[in-house]
Length: 322
Image (cartoon, rainbow, N blue to C red; front, side, top):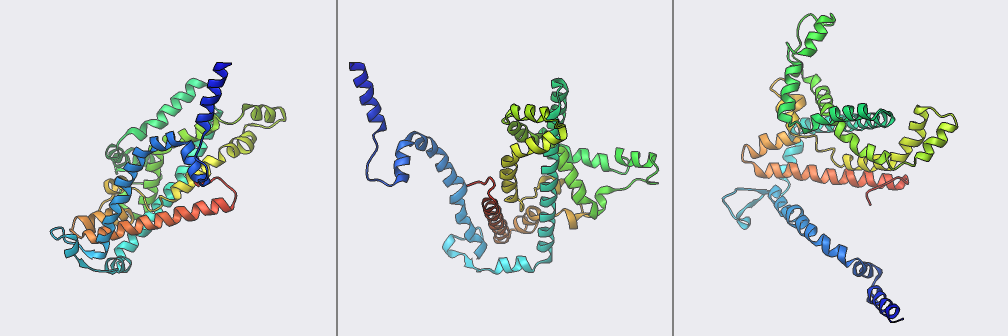
């Protein structure tokens, strides 16, 4: 009897919460252990993500590193006007959006298709071998990957040898010297490097689907394709939508290493993107205000795209970030 009284008193003390507070603060009090655990992350977030936003003021100055903040000459929106009047910036903006779109479409389609195919493989050993082979390129640095792509596409590389032996061409083609080919080469190289890694999240989502659904569909006479279409894809649809929203927020981030390593003077009109533009015409020339203005534009556009994509998903009744 005494033990029951003690346990009741302790449970009453645990459930005790301050009265008269709004629901939000009552939830914070109930989950105070989680709040305390999240404090280090919030401190890190503030120091490394929000505090550096103070540097955006440089975009509105004619910044000179030797001068203090109050001694800088203010330029207003001069750098932004210069960006949108510069043909080079408009060209690299086109290239950035084009390569990001190619990467988004090819990355999603190939990863989902490979995950669906791997999910249907019944021989565990074969499945593991295919997964290992498809994962390996992800762990290769872009320096090594770019060297492999360059040697493969060189005039005496394996691609040209196959085309010559198949009588499609008479002499080797310098693929990286043809500007119009760069976007396709970038898309194929990115897929080769990351397709296996991108399938992990989809395969993990597929394991959460109830096997009874597949058994019922098989008893009803549904083949593998119909099971994939009517069970597997709807089962991983929330994951696909959330990842799509997140990737739309990165449309202004087409990468840096592949464009920098595979780009050259012959394909620069198609290989140069925003990050390379900031490096060449901003940081390398000491024009820090211009580089901050370009980076600020990229961040603001990314936030707007993410917000729009999330709200469209919300209106359509699909999964969303918040």
